[in-house]
Length: 398
Image 1 (tube, rainbow, N blue to C red):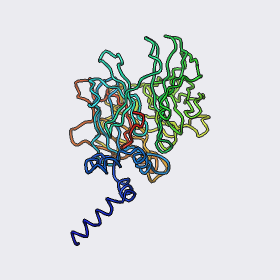
Image 2: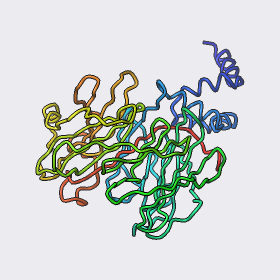
Image 3: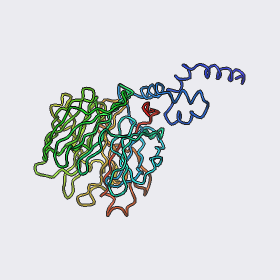
Image 4: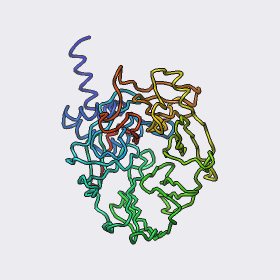
């Protein structure tokens, strides 16, 4: 091809803003970050909030976003480090070193944005912020009212870029220490203002609502609970509603771990129970009308070991060897996949075909997890999974 003709074609594309935007919309977020350096024109286009929103929506499939990777953090270990589990393609996920803190706690992942808190090492929270790790952009949160010493204080995020470019920060705070009386403060990025919600509610000690464990789904913010019922917030209407929690299926056996998640507009809850050796994972799904949970599957990890004989689960008493349960949708099929950290590898059970599959194998002799000296046994590690979505979304209210 004639080089002059190629240059002429490139110039025509480059000078056509609409055509250039349509091409860039189809590129991965990581590529767009690099292409900001091409020219001032590209920098301006890629940094434009409207383009960022269009790019995010272009990544959606049938009304939902699908994560690029999972970030696994070891429970109770404060660190800016985490293990990266690729789900679509290998992607180097930026760590949170640009926040300049030695101790970091991720509170929630929500469609490309993270809510985090810093810690001074003595479990004293110093700052809260939201960030987009793909762009390394973050914003420190300033609250309407300071937290009361000794009183409970929880921060969550509601954000769905497929519906709106705006987000809300929801703070559940106890009005007095050990009062079990809570109030909602809500920040709306659209108005760049806080609102003290008129909702004041009281919980009972036995309700065991875990306000630190929140899931945003279908425009509602849901909180996990270890009791018989919990709460969810209709974010648009700013009103609270009750929702039931799954009843125990194993008599008087003590539930030991619970994983609360969503995928494709559905709520899921997985649980394990305390036993000398127990390889069962009970998976529940919430009914669409919020009337009840139903047991979707009782997975036995022993079946996974038949498929992957290199796994050695249940070898350590009261530590099953699997953790970090997350539910991930499929772009082509109706059902979800449940992704599990198992003996240092990442496997999944695909409900579409009822089969165990390997998601990520770090290689012979390698294990996903922190150094073994932190624990008496590898299987004692417990992971919390956070979904990572590559996104060029920018905060308009910086």
